[in-house]
Image (cartoon, rainbow, N blue to C red; front, side, top):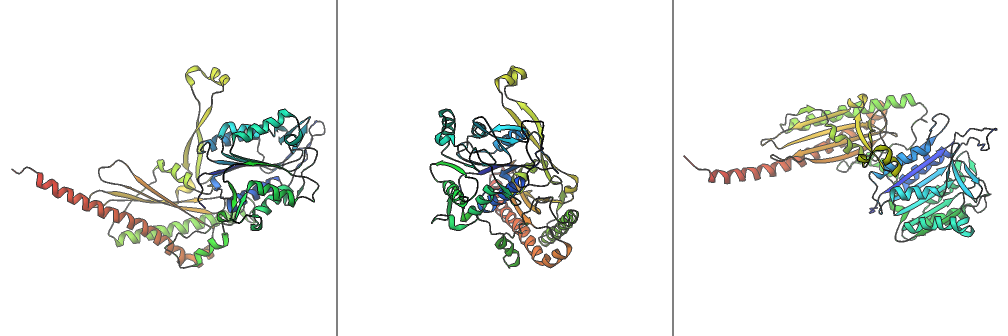
Length: 488
């Protein structure tokens, strides 16, 4: 389904709270909050039309503790702000963890650090100015019943947030006086949301699930629970939180490889499972290297075969570093640290002429710049050929194989520039694959080989056609020039 805006998400799950009997805030560790956001991330991708690269997560567990989460939220918002179209794009915010009631206000607990629930829409609105906003708080004591029958001050706060957006919804796990329940499979509120989103019977006649309908159905689903979700939804215009047209049928996608449809893009999507919980992680990473080496070998064989058939002698070169940001931003899935990395390079403040201290007081906005790099173990899985024809109309064919959280990506690049022009045209295409053992690769090798051959041949033929037209135009221009040459 084509939509005219991008969907972004911030998902935060905290399990590793510490009990401190001497403190006035004594929080027990939790078990299902990180699981909540992992499951919600899959649902947003598979059912709601979110791209994985637009989903930002913070997971804090005993094995992998995330400190200074409040600062990390600010960093995420800055990262999102780089590509977020203000007044057009949407944001989904989800928190699973402990909540705290202090006097009349509700807070989410970032370990022992509280953040007022009502401050979160304010922070996001100030940074991003989203057109559509949805907030989920799966934590205790969070329900803003004051919006319905509370003080004018808090009612006006939320009302102002709603008025700034053409679409806004908030779903609280329970009333301020209640606790949010969790099971071994995660929070009851989050699980109810996922259940509704994943069942087509809750969608309207156009197979659309709006945020308002989602909230109402979750409340009905949990009517017999010991917690009462509170939902607020005020939207204008058309905003499908989920649609049947967004649904990714993983089984159907994987079946493509089994069919003789090599003229189409053949993609295998890895089973969606968070990195770090594989039954044998060391073997998984070993299989990933094996798959990368097998793929690279097939691709190089096909490139040489096709170019030799056409009488083209390739010159092998390295990928230009200027291409790395384009490759990174084209991916739908996050590369692992051993692959293509994006790191903050420079932190600067606007209007530095008036001085850092004064600017800090005035609230100058920090901006981040990034550098992109390929780690040594990924450099092995790069191949690029530089090719020239009769009139030096050159093009480059490149392939980059990257490790992802759930598998591998194979990125094909085609760069071409016409004679006499300083501009380059760049085409990028990403294919995604499961990690395979040698035995699995051998079973599918023929089909994979045919797919790679078709893809490379398509790229080369496309440029060859362009070269042919370009050369004919150039010959015509030369003939015209010859008739104008002064003869001696």
